[in-house]
Length: 109
Image 1 (cartoon, rainbow, N blue to C red):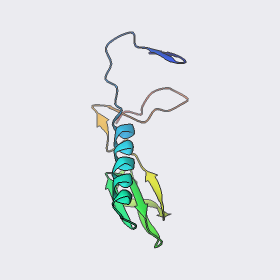
Image 2: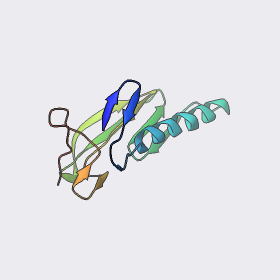
Image 3: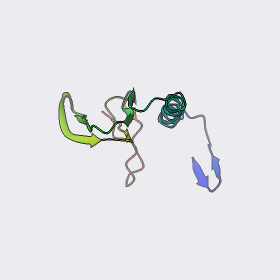
Image 4: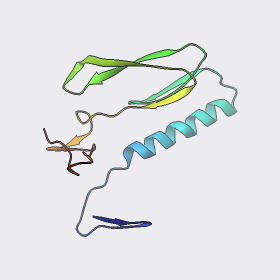
């Protein structure tokens, strides 16, 4: 694959995953609809993409990608969005969607 703004050239068949961008956009659309119909406090959780509107803070556990039963941190959000992702959740064979910027590869498991 080559990128020369604004053009991307794919030299052989590839599977490209735009799920996270589409999911985040859908969360924005649903949020706008809720507000349009008078909703003031709500939480939309689309599998790690969260939009939370409330004056009460929400604590969100950040999953350890090596142990899905363990949190490695907590994010506190109010009137904002959070997008979380893990190579342990979205993967295809030995590959996942997070690319190491130094090696330009995903860390296979």
